[in-house]
Image (cartoon, rainbow, N blue to C red; front, top):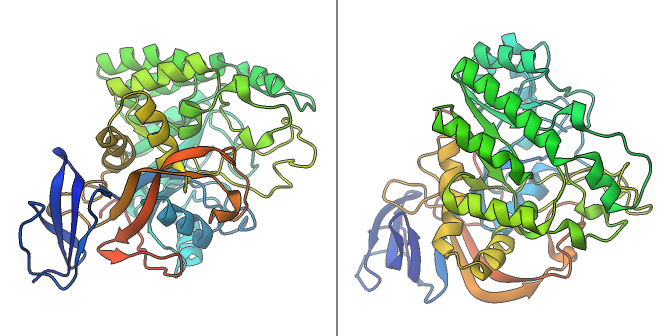
Length: 436
């Protein structure tokens, strides 16, 4: 007898979408059988036409705890993740105090998260000037790799690295490095302004292109793996394609806001749309979609980066002073599915971009897929239902979102973490490490 069987006419397996029954025992998928096949189980649930997806894996989440828990925290961020069908997050090393730049800081962060996590959580380490000698020990402690900024991060305790310092960090440890790629020499100082066009002009596409070239050069020189975070500027895609063709170990991600929002329709003063790098025009988004379909962009992750409404300058609408970050971990799946279906993509494509490939990026072979031996992290998703985004129903700490009032397709009906139904009142998540 197994613990649970979930049946659906639309099971999203690694082989594609098909009717099936997913048998679960001791938190693992033990079999994927025919939809009508008898299986002796303690609990047998039939979802009908509601799709059964693997839990999403979001490798780009800023939880901010400890130290800036008034921005966001493990309890609220992971509640929001579970409500959005995300069953695994990897937390970024900055905006928390201390930042995760050595083993002691990692211990502090894990202690802060203990007893609060509603989904499984792993951690990135940080590469900053002067800590290259600490990276190997931090990697051995279980972080999934290291984040580096090539431009100002926005917080003084996590300064950017120079091109030379990036190379030093890459040589210090054989690990995955994820890079915020904007070149400071191409960024333009901006005075107070509520005009989105002024903010966009201050962070031109050339800044991304130059920094991505720097990151590629470092990967080429060292042979290490480099992953470009939150790719916004489609003009950098030929650089990445050429590097990959040359055997450079470089990959790239993008985010829901770059694929679905359009600079031409962002109202002045609407600082909830501010993120770095910025949202660009519709033609740029079209190019990102093509690269995603072609596999040049490997995955879609949230870059969930909330803050207080005061830091967002909701009172003044000043883009120059507002914190740059979009809170979307709960909404990423319906946001992407809404746009993807309009462009002729399948639900299986969305699962590939948001579950399997992010899991593969960080080496989580048991996550992001429905297959025997994988963790039974599952999502009941109604792709035909629609809803209007009400910020008051979001679980992240502050009800600020650029998606407010938008009609989205796809509703998460239920989430299971290792075969157990997740509710926002449970904190049954586990810590994940690079070793499993």
